[in-house]
Length: 77
Image 1 (spheres, rainbow, N blue to C red):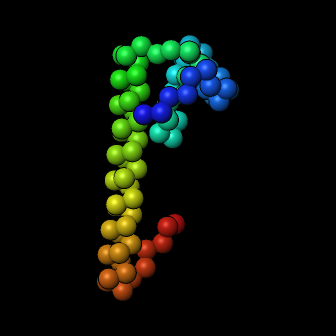
Image 2 (image 1 turned 90 degrees about the vertical axis):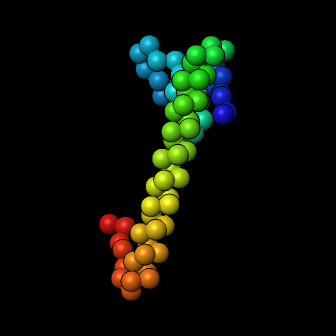
């Protein structure tokens, strides 16, 4: 898990009392250090992101290959 501390992007994205976020598989934080509890919490979000992305890619692939084998066409729209 990649963590960007004291991130300018985090400072521009976050609002209110939020100090840390997971953004496209990486953790951005305004802080200079994170507790183990926060690292574990954000690590769970990173894992969920990659698992859902992989499931979506596999599903997309199976639908398009299945349609091609059946002679049809599946539109992205």
